[in-house]
Image (cartoon, rainbow, N blue to C red; front, side, top):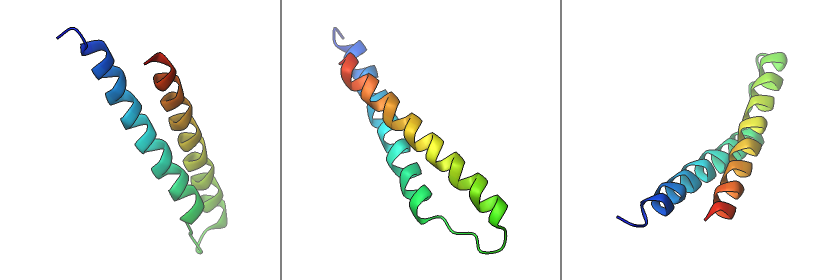
Length: 64
């Protein structure tokens, strides 16, 4: 029970890393040929969440 704080940080690190990497993958491979405006909005969101997830992962890694 003494390392519960490290375990929570590690859980946040893996969750943020998974979210970041999967969002970056969706940013790279997402295509919507019907509506270019919607595609650009969705790609921007995927890129933002991917970058935010990677940043949170790196902060949690530093906190460990």
